View 1: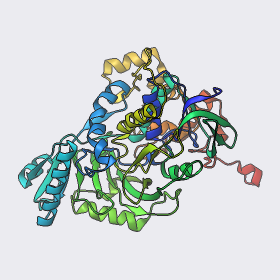
View 2: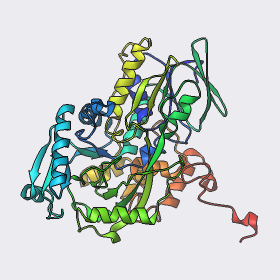
View 3: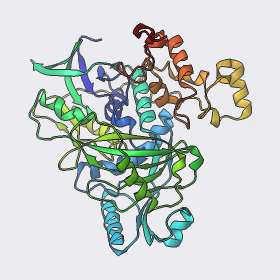
View 4: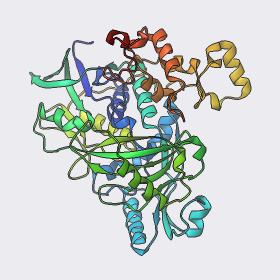
Length: 481
């Protein structure tokens, strides 16, 4: 830990990690505080992974300003960081004349944002998407839309930032912020960090962080969205991200061809009070299911392997808050709901410019390395390449996760990339061990063995995802034998 940082980032989600990576390009000292044991533990681990085209964000908003740029940045970022990204296109389906009017308005708004779309008719829709409801009349087609994996992307940003000298501190929940003689004192339960500038990227808690130090005129109300994830056997059911016409407060429940071959449906949009409530409800998931059946009756519920919920940081005016606060040097990156993932790096660029305008001296480094060594994906190797890999390291020949065909060698590799891995969920978010049909039923104890060996954590002390979620209990202490 340094005596004082130039910039301290609060929050290790997608926005905080993008900001850390972008600011690492400059000759400044940077640290990031995250209250969990890893990055991408809240909103950034539980969303659809869509890369939106940018046609729906209102032209006059910050969302509209950043949407097209955020989308375009993904090609270059993936070429440098190898997190995985595919442009698959998206469609908004219209089933009546009123829906068609909505498509026309979306197209006009997209043109203002600099986004190219086209309205196509039934025959063309069904050529691209033969499994869609044939009663569809028109669709707004956006070729530039795509899919990625938000937690893999966030991890990539964090690893590259760490490789370029950014300090990450985990299990450090911020409890107070003070400013004395132009220096911020950011307190956690265990430590106090000093910095000249602070970026507040605390997700659904960004309003509470802001209130610790400055006047705050925004309020975050969590908006919960529930999803259902299908087995990879459903690959090819749809080729594009499929939307209905948007509803108030939501783009609508979508069918998404996820990057790794699964199909995902959701999310709904429910405003709630509890910023920790990520429970799923049968009645909501039933509604998600029925809404998607209207777009395609080829969905098979027997192929659902899990369901989950995520929270979005929504505000009353439904726009981002990215600005310096009335406390000079405290910069809020708040109310980042959809399309936050899409525009995450555009937000990082905006934050960099705000810091410059706020007075931070920022000189480009000569030694910044934009590239991250890609993870090894067995399914992308030829038989000859795979055999050579095993000759070099036999651990690549031992399959740990059967559903996703993930080997011991792959798991060991991702565990030594700058962030200490303490639990199976962190492994899952990096290399998908436990992400398949059996949801860790086979591989969980084997992953735990590797964590125990590689990071010297006792087997019975390894939690699922944090210090409260234990996998094993010593029942002998309770008289059970």
